[in-house]
Amino acid sequence: MTAIAKTIRLHPSDNVAIALMDLLAGTEVEGCSAQTFQVIPRGHKIALEAIAAGENVIRYGQIIGQAKTDIKAAEHVHVQNLGMGEHTQEYGHATQNRPLPPADDVRSFMGYKRADGRAGTRNYIGILTTVNCSGSVAKFIAEAAERSGFLEQYPNIDGIVPIVHATGCGMSGEGEGYATLFRTLSGYAQNPNFGGILLLGLGCEVMQIPDLVAGRKIRADGMLQYMTIQQEGGTRKTVARGLEALKGVAEFANQARREPVPVSEITIGLQCGGSDGYSGITANPALGYASDLLVRHGGTTILSETSEIYGAEHLLTRRAETIEIGEKLIERIHWWEDYTARNGGEMDNNPSPGNKRGGLTTILEKSLGAVAKGGTAPLRGVFKFGEKIDRKGFVFMDSPGFDPCSVTGQVASGANLIVFTTGRGSVSGYKPTPCIKLSTNTEMYNKLSEDMDLNCGDIVSDGVSIEEKGRELFELIIRVASGEQTKSEELGFGGAEFVPWQIGAVM
Image 1 (cartoon, helix red, strand yellow):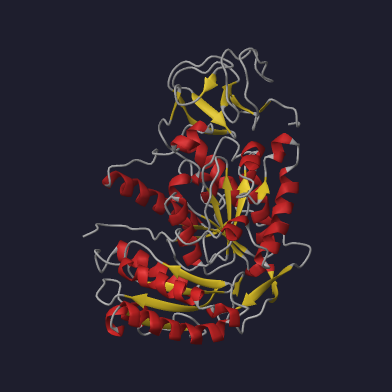
Image 2 (tube, rainbow, N blue to C red; image 1 turned 180 degrees about the horizontal axis):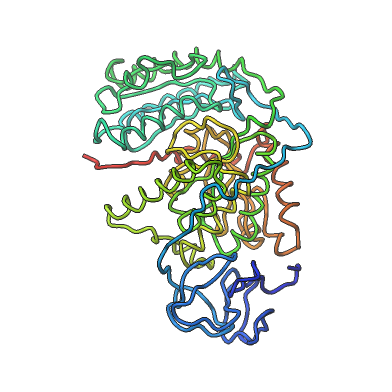
C-alpha cells in the first residue's frame, strides 16, 4: 500500500478490497478486471471478482459472511448483499502458542507504588457507592470538598471521584448478577489508581457494606473508610461525616509520590468503540503492536468485549498457552449464545448503525478487526467480568461490547490505563484510569482533534507503518502512565462512565 492508493487488499486470498477514499463510478480497482459502477464510500468493501450467492466473502484471509445474492466484480459489498451465514470454527486450542522474545531494553514510568505490589498511574480518592440510593450523597460530599478547597492542602492527590451507578438493590442477593457487582465494587476499591476509598451505602440495600468488608482486608494498605446514610442520620450529617472521613484518607493518600516503576506494572484495558472499516487496518493493528511491546516488557494487556470477538475467537484459542485456557474462552462464548437467546437477542446484533455507515457489515468482520488490538502474544488467561487479573501478559476478560460497561470491568480487574480506538468518534473518560483515544482515520481525527490523542489514520493517508505507529503509541502510553494528561482528562470526563454489568432481573 502507498499513500496514494485508492484501495487495499488485506490478504492474498481476499475476494474484497477496502476503499481508502470515496470512489466514484468508473474508478479502476487494482486487482479487479472491472471498474466501479456505483459510488463506494471510503472504508467500504469492493468485490474483486464475481461472488456467487451463498459463496464466502473473505477479508483478512478469513470468512466475514456469505453473499446473499450474486455479487458482480467491482460491486459495493455491504448489508444489501452480505449476510452472517452459519458460524462454525476450528478452534485449534494452543496450536499457535508462540511466546514473544523479551524486550532488549528495560523501561520504567513514574508511578505510585502501592502496598499490594501494584502501581498506580494516578492518585485519586474514590467515594464508592454500594447502591444507586447513595449516589447523590456521594456527589454531595465530593462537591462540598471541592467548594471548600479541601485538596489545596493535598497537592499529591489528583482529585476526588464519586463512583455512582444504577444498581445495588432490586436484585437477587445471590447468583451471577450479585457476584458480578460484588467483584466490580471490590475491584474498584482495590484499583491502584486510588490512594484511598470512602465506601458509602444507604443501609438497607441488597449489596450490604458488611458483606463487602467483613472478614477480609479489601485494600492491602487498609485505607478504606465506610458508612451508611441511615446510620449517620441523613444527608447533611452524612456529608459532614464524609468530609471528616476524607481528611484521614487524604492525609494517607497525599504521602504517595511518583517514583520510577518498571513498565511491567502497566496494565492496559484494550478497547474499541464507534469502529469503522479502517479500524482493522490502522488503529487496532497499531494498538496490537504496542500491546506486544508492553507484554515483551513484562506488562499486561486485557482484551474484552466477548460479543465483539464472536467469529474471531478461533484466532485467540489457537494462541492460548494451554488447551484449558482456550476451552475457558469457548465456555464464555457458549454462555453468551445462551445469554442472548434467553433475552430475546442474538450474537449478530452487531455492527451498530454507526459501524455500518463506516463500512462494517457483519459481526464476523467487526470481530476480526477487533481482535487485532490484542497483537500476537500468547493468551495467558481468561477472566470473568471484574475478576482480578493475577498474571502478566496478554489476557481476556469477559464483558459486553458496550464500551463504558466493558471498561468498568477492566478497571475492576486492575487496569491502570485504557487505550481506546475509534473510527466514528467517541467522547468518554474513565476515572480513575486515564484513557488514550486513537483515531482510525485522519478525517475524523481532524474533526474531533480535541478529543483524540493520536491519529492512526496516517497509516493510510501518509504511509506510516503499523510498527512505527505502534512504537509511537508505546511511548505515549509511558508518558501518560507517568502523568501526562489525556484529552479526556483535560476535558473532565469520567463522572458518568462507571457502568456495572447488570445481569438478571430487576425486582
